[in-house]
Amino acid sequence: MAKKKKYIPKARHNPEVHARKLEKNRSEINRINKTVEALTASHDIHISYLGNFARHDIKNSIQSMDSILSTTSAEEITEENILSLKANLKIIRETMDNFSKLIPYSKDERFTLKNLIIAVELLTRNDLYKNKIKLTKELPKEIDIFLNLPFQSILQMFNNLVINAIKALENSETPNIKIFAYVNEDYLIIELSDNGMKINEKDVEKIFDFGYSTTDGSGIGLYHAKYLCELFNGKIEVRFEKNDYCKTFLVHLPIIK
Image (tube, rainbow, N blue to C red; front, side):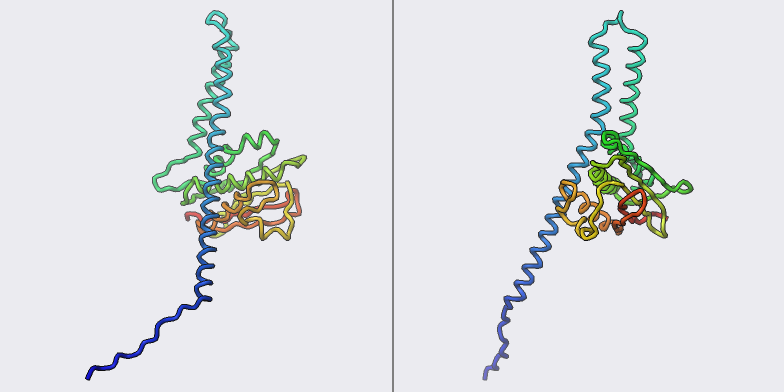
């Protein structure tokens, strides 16, 4: 006599569980899309700043040299013309040398805090000069601080923060930005302060949200900065000040002992 098969009830699908899973997947896809968009936008801004950095000085120097050479014959060249040509050649050489500082090379992929700040300043110097912004730097002098992180990503992150500060300073009569760095245990903490537009305390939780902006910007810079910071096991926060500056962004990044 054939043995009766054990009855196994068919698994029933719970529509509510599936709905929750679908919603979770949609949220994750939306988060990934926002991150990709922020990375792309930040990368584009970074590339444009790199291009502007090189083009500004080199273009002006070439135009100045071309003006002398195209309007002056060999017999008419003066000592002043020669000095001007030498000065412009020096500017081109310095620009090329500075450009190399934006992409420091290291076999073990590490870089110093000093190189990072130099690169940030080089990238934003035209905007700082154009907007008459005073930049103050206070860095540890007694030790070299090394970071073992992707240099271009960290440079983009701080470039975004400085651009955000520059936009906040558009209506300031005495615009100032201060960069203050120090070590706390295993972390490098970089404070970036400005005396520009204040942030409403009720909006503090929103400023790192995708698309949120109080300066008519894209609302991507701070979102991207926070994403990168957390990606490298760091964190970023904002603090309100009651001194010459109105707000400070604090970036915590792991350092090499």
